[in-house]
Image (cartoon, rainbow over all chains, first blue to last red; front, top):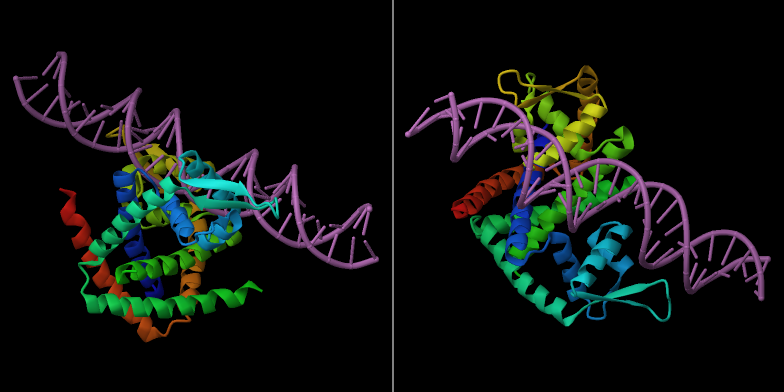
Length: 149
Length: 149
DNA sequence: CCGAAATGCTTTAAGCTTCAAGCATGTCAA
DNA sequence: TTGACATGCTTGAAGCTTAAAGCATTTCGG
């Protein structure tokens, strides 16, 4: 098997292991999911709120995806939807107080989990990995962007 | 923000970029999906076929997931299901000729895509990344296994 | 102004995924 | 032998995800 394939499978395995653990804990401790958490995180970084389109761009998922996710979070009282007065096509989402409080709690736990998960890797290897992934990301952007024409 | 969190987000971004590209190409070139491809790959490595339980273990997904996936692949004529005579609870899946042929084609293309995607990263960095991810995987296994008790 | 194009969101159909409950079959101990 | 437990798979409810079609609104050229 090609070495690139082995590299890819290893990258995928590591990511999946961590992601599965984070999903499991979000579910277990907060009865929530990663997409919900990610959406709250996006809103938390934007005090003025975000349009659905801005959110789908930041989360790199489709448009229609956010419609449903936002509907569920609204039903849970964590976000508020309101139509932009100046452009009535736009729906702006903001965190409610309850949403901000829930995210604060979840976010702190999440950061702790990630730190815990990586704690078994020595600091200098964490740094080396971070650096290499930075290079990889640049290389990917380059490799995957030129072809779209 | 904690350095572990930045490392995790970078790891996630790299993996997601590659995975999205592979999904896109599988869809575009072969009108198939990553789970289908992964299931065929598992069967391709097992000439005698595999039980649904063995497959869900190898793919690290739930049991019920495979039931549906296998049903769709069977409907497409790529895999054959048959009940084990010695234990009639067990369903054994094998590749059909059409399935083996389809997978051979897809697999070759997939390996090429992965090589292409990583081609923008210099070989010595690919090797370093592979090595570090190996260490990471071991560390993760250690960090995520002790706690289950 | 008015029609055409663009933009933002929603809906729909299909598939992937999980968990929990349920069914069929097999195993084992009393 | 038979009842209890274990094992393997399926089903059902819910949520996530996409692509494509559709609707409402805005923008812009004429």
